[in-house]
Length: 207
Image 1: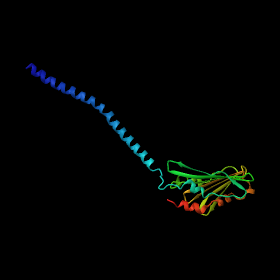
Image 2: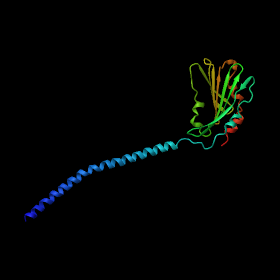
Image 3: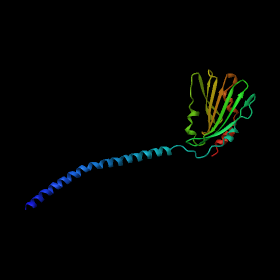
Image 4: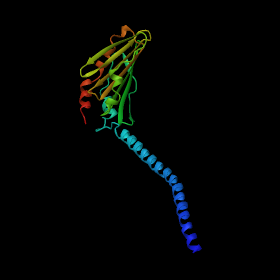
């Protein structure tokens, strides 16, 4: 009889102790839940970063060769010397760019550096260079348009420099820098007029 009473007393105590232990173990599950949440956040962030990378503009067609661009440069300039022409290409995160450069040395000491760049299908990534002129003290800026080429010229008489930046068919960029520039040289745009813009326009239509 005594044993039965002890048994009845012991069972409730055992159940109470078991319940208390179960409640103490529950908090250990929380770090696992938080860890899973952190993992979910990381995945979302990685997906967002991947979408940003995928949104980078890629060329749908290649640029023309630098040699083709070089054919549009002036061949003969009266009273001036054309230095050794160069061509090159650059691989950017947006795609391939090709380029042709020459330097024209005039007898009065004026130097004109001419560069033509084919940006292929990613011109929009650099369009501000040709559409938004920079400004310095003493600089006179003028919007210019020659044929289908549009852009601006910036003349600084204090520094004796003139810069021309024009874009053709939202693809090909024309960059000209004139050093030791004076009014005796004439309009800076006469350097642009020496280029074969018609052939350059034909190249701009190639896909």
